[in-house]
Length: 471
Ligand code: PHE
Image 1: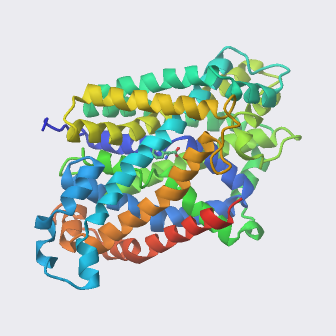
Image 2 (image 1 turned 180 degrees about the vertical axis):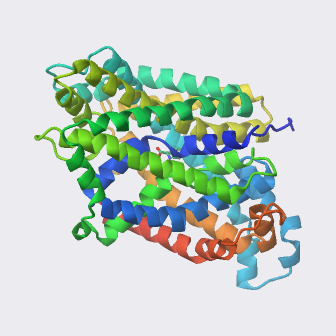
């Protein structure tokens, strides 16, 4: 097999993994959830979810990836090979058989498949962000404008969203083909600081908005009356999605970590960056929203593409130049975050095809890019001309989202927890987390407890909630 490359620096490791985590989920989904679910009360529950579920699951993915230095599917296969489980082979009890089962390998297959299917519609929404960036810099989002009609017309057009998605995907492709160090790492090191800088500039700008105090109060004052079990579960779900868990992405990235990478610290840093970005995006969006009296903070998913252009336009009507820059930078932020995440969705599939089907990385990347584009086009058309074609009452776009993100993803999450918590040899896990005894990890026992019991149970609850109780 071809020589595998690794990330070249510690900062590269953190920025690449944080690039995967920081995405549309932070800029778009998090503020929407906060707006709908009681402001700071939701944020508080979210922080708990990140700490008690998100970080342990992320660390487990790191353990799987780094201990095998292989793509997600091969990683699970290697860890279930008889040599790894020799000492427990003779255990013929039900528990013993379950532990030795080859079915655990589904964990890796699930990761790669979900990454692929999520890519197909993620690139469509990413294409929208590219369109809004261009439209914003071409000054098409200012003046008297029907933003809702603009959005509707754009997403249902048969060719426009497809064109933007294809351009977006080609950018992702070029980065992937350049490889781990020259592509993913180099671009993450360039894009993530840019993204953080844009956030800083936008937060400072939002201080001057008339709705700043009200927006901040909304975000920082908890409204516990809105908290229900469903809200708690959506906080856990949001943490899961935002941290890119159970999609083979972080597991594949971890397979490029060096032997001296501190896995626990990396997981904490990535979670910290991801959470700070999400909260700071709220600091940008809510002051803007509260600056315009006719708009409410819980507008739902249209927030970023319908409400915000309208808000930017009105909030800065005295200083249109600043409005122009603010809006342009905001969409660049959205675009960069989508780009780093899309790269991390492409990589697990490319790595698998490259390593297992014995084709060059370039060819593997092309296969993934073309397949994603084809299915992506179908998803995009399903919002417009193919809208009548429905499976189980859902158009293709919603079907992909439902099956991958809502159905398979939680199951994959549970599998990862059970795999690392119950199946893997405890010594192997400890060796990975402590770098073979070189690091002191005082919370190791807590981690094991969380991954064995708390996280799988919590994810199972989200799963049933999504399936039976969400609208
Ligand atoms: N974490 C990304 C976001 O917040 C979404 C994503 C999921 C990206 C899985 C990569 C893998 O938008």
